[in-house]
Length: 270
Image (cartoon, rainbow, N blue to C red):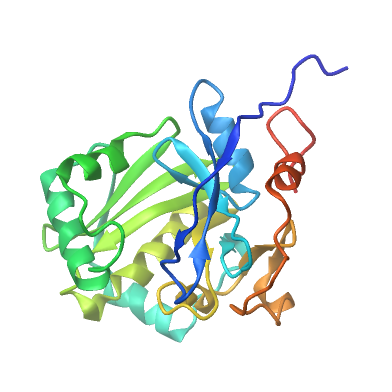
């Protein structure tokens, strides 16, 4: 007999705003606060249902007429690097990984700003100051690490990473844009796959895959990629017709979406 109730937070929806990935689109997010002693289990549970973490908030897209953003993860035991990825691993053989607690440093912030200025100068994070950066790194109620990568004794890349019960969730990564020949963005993902395998975890959560987006479409290059589509995880190769075209009325009402979620203490999440 069950004696505890499911952990179900209050959900809200953001106002529509310009989509950062696709032109002439509006985005909305379904979100809930992540706090208290149940934060870790809630983060793990909702990560399996397409949610992402930003500081003490869990969110996923709930756009009115578009369903292009799909949560993506790599099944690490089924992953095999392609020739380009093998070359990237070899190129970065001298890169050293260091795992630290979620504590922001000046060196991280300087690298973060260089990355944004080069790759996302017009994005919503471009104006973040050192205090906002520190909040992004440090305000976490869950099991989080900063994975740093050093090359020639200098910080070359970093990733804010959550440890969930079945994998590693890459919250945000950034790297030195002047080191293009090292393909550090790719290497960070490949190294997280290696780390997840070592920890006997099943998945690396990559965030959202957006077909048609130059910023987010690259994730389809990884083998064993799964996407959260129609309320379940599917191998990308088994969903050939996913596109970024508008899909009017394909988003269920928010109340219906929330009612269909699983929470810690309810039945097992798929």
